[in-house]
Image 1 (spheres, one colour):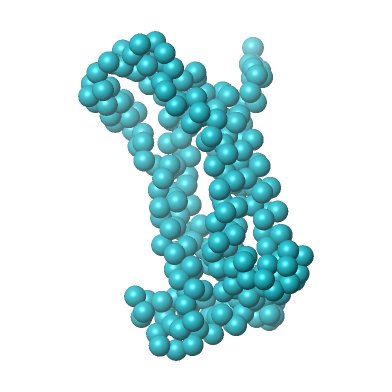
Image 2 (cartoon, one colour):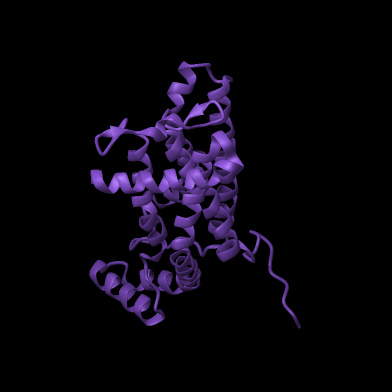
Amino acid sequence: MSAFMSVFAGLVTGLADLLQPLFHAGAAAAAIVLFTACVRLAVHPLSRASARGQKARTKLAPQIAELRKKHGKNPERMQKALMELHAKEKVSPLSGCLPSLAQMPAFFLMYHLFSNRTIGGERNELLGHSLFAAPLGDRWTDALAHGGLFGGAGLVYLALFAIIAGVATFNFRQMRIQLANAPAMPAGPDGQQIPGMGAMTKMMPLLSFATLFTVGVVPLAAALYVVTSTTWTAVERYFLYYRGMPVAGVVPATVP
């Protein structure tokens, strides 16, 4: 692991050196953004597959609702019927998780790289880099302790929080539209709403704001990774999935 971290540190340092003439003191931060973009480009095929799968699952929702009505009292038969339906339509229920799972190693590498003062037994030189007044190895608590909320480092975090809040709000609105246009949630075997399903449906859009917590507790370098990746995801999902989705309560026009 130590040798691997040394190689990764060399990669980030090399990117920073290439970007130094353009970004000067912020070259390491720019290198992290560029690295994140490269990771997202690498997993883009998975994102496209995920979007296709999500569209397919949306189209299958009425059939799944019918299966729940038909096999609601027989969980084993219900599970088998769902697997058969997904296999018939060539839809993977797990495809939506693949982009996130594929980039998790890159996030953890960035987290560990900027959480350790030594790499391969040598001083971690990357900890000497910063984004404006905020060191890349520090956390939000460090910014608050040295300058406060509106200090130099604190303002960097406020900017990151503002970006994440904007992206989360966009995701929140899009997910609300998606849920509003989805078929009604099926009832349980006794004809009553499945316990907890309504609350879970209401909570799902709010999960978009959980990234704010992540940005506040990880090193700034990892926070930059999260902000860049989350923004990329929002733009990507808009073009691959949300664009063209009907607005709740509006019936799409039909061509005669």
